[in-house]
Length: 607
Image (cartoon, rainbow, N blue to C red; front, side, top):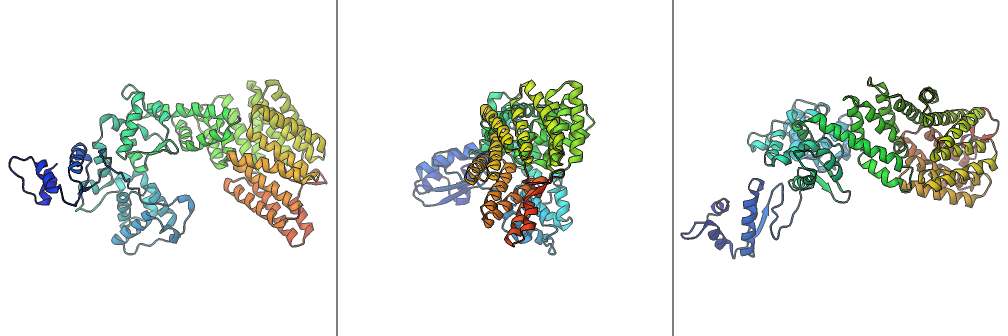
């Protein structure tokens, strides 16, 4: 190691002195910078010599490049980040993409092999995907750009799942490990201990990162003890194989490193099944806690591992574990509604129901009810009715009273939205009786909420108030913050209709505060609508318009078609009012229920 420094400096070794003593003597009073490049394969020797030299040579400075720290006295660590890369969901224009380092490098290298290469509106999305999925790794970006000589960016993107065969053909003059992406990762892999290699491969099962606890449960066995996981994670983090986010207390891995690990994974089914079981247990616990006093904690826990949950469900469908995947999916109804993941929920529910694997009738009944709830948010009443009638039939067949009550509640919502109020009342009352029978307090509060809205629609404000106050009392008793926000909204709605503007404002703002606290996108959008109504009643057209537009933006983001329609009615009604067309404004700001002559404000029934 010492000779590697002595020779370039042209130092002659002296008799009766060790090479290290000769080097130290030469550098003792010199102000000099030494660069030690790629120390990882001699990390111990480099660390030992560096510390000795710095101790004896006060003016000496050393820069060492390595995938892990030397861990010697006086060391200051600077981690070189990956190149900045775009978020594919941002839909940046070709001009906007050039702000990212990875895109600029890709374009520069592409032009060297293909002078006709250009970024345009058609290939910009694929370029953003390529740079993002390659995690801004310079060598990977360069190798991908070199492929533009024979492939379009779109074709390069399509082949990234096989990136280790795609990203080859580096410069012949480069070091062997820099000529292909596989060679680069092989080099890092070969420097690890056997247990580090095994853990790396097992960590490839995670999607979107993981916690220490998840790694301990899923990646340990008779080869790697659970108690050793934390030390191995630390080693892999030190060697830049994985990353640790201290503020979030989560680990993550670059996509290329993950794919390489997946290729090395042994006993694949066993690890994936442990992954499925871990997230199944977490989903079942979260389902209960989401209706508790701290829903934000559990919403954030699920959000952090959302990709892991989705992967677990999808893996279960093709590996004869459909029932477990279905249980996870049914547990997530509340989360997907609150955070606005309607399309994700519908896609997974439909995939499970269309899968040819065996489902128990109990879980199938719940799935049909869940997808019905989501379909009603998209305004698909016909499909919702089909799903809920089938779930009701299954519930009756197997005696699942919770499914029976839920199905009748949603069928009541369909009837309400279509103006069939007597039918709706019948469904709600039957649902309430069943929920009281089984002691489902959360369900009782929901149906009381719906009965309150039905009374409001029919003009019976006193009955509406009683139903909503009873619902609020139950929700406070069980600590259901999400439900409390709905009860407050309804009471505010009643106060507004009766002309009590200050009281309505207090209820609406309190409801909005809770919804912002827990991250309820759907609820926030509805709160904006109601605050828009209040501003409109008070004659503040500009403020009303802003609330309606903010509401519309959120509803579009989460794909809530009923909400979109409601916000459009209100925003356009406000605009018509500004222009003095009060007749048109009234039509927009009110909704005419098919079976009623009176006009009433649109309300939100719960499932």
